[in-house]
Image (cartoon, rainbow, N blue to C red; front, side, top):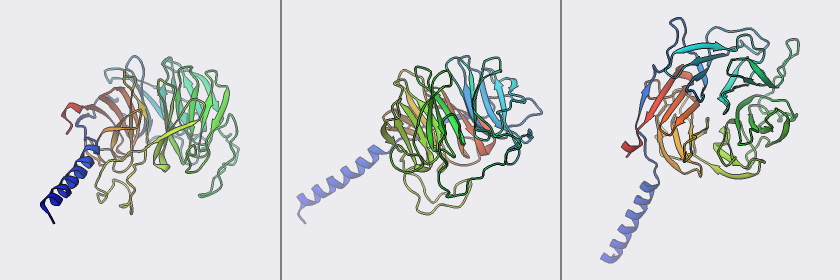
Length: 358
């Protein structure tokens, strides 16, 4: 082989390697604070499924404790809504004896500081005003005497019924205060209601095509009123306009050690490159960003609204700075995150240092 051919071949190989490196997002350094919230001495976190922050900096944690309430649910009903002030001091527990609380899945504050609770177990979506009173209920929970319907694994998807939910997971709002509810474990759709709670429409069904869902697990809306749905089991975030027209898909792809043992379960065989999006938090910063997370390899991802990955952080595990099923993220600023670290039974406050990223 001639020297010129060797040089051209070597340059091409170097260019290809540089292209791969250029596309690899950086790992973002961060600090973790696990003592940011001060629980009373006789309380502990259980499985923390949600976290939300209002305009005053008050934090509400959706906690599933060891003690249980009563109610006609499969297994024990269990939900606590714990409020902390901006310094992390415990303020109160909300929602005692509220009929719609059974096994809540998500909490979000709207722009009026109303707290919304999406309850997967009771098929309800509730609005609490800042005083802690329920001022709206959407959906309807099963009555105590009713015989619960158990959907068989692999069974045909249930028929959608306007105004009812089947395993709802999350809620978000557009600029006109219309509500978008990911309806979720059973129905595999997005429901749209107006600010009065009146039904407008729904879109989606169970499947893999664009506009279909396989467990819509979290939802968010940007300032342009585009709707982002964490289509978890399809390993993508789907983006729609406010009328439900599909715009694009976003996937999270970054190199990781596929032989590393996850915190729960066996090492999966033939792991795809795309991670499963569990959460969506869209910042309210001048330039908006998306934060999302996965189960394995247990990371949190920072992306632009166009889906470009800007960096990632963390990994699965039990130690500080590791995560065991991040089930919710609150993002009060671009570089401050509050993480509901579900199976580690804790809240972590993360301070990101992107200036140190390599």
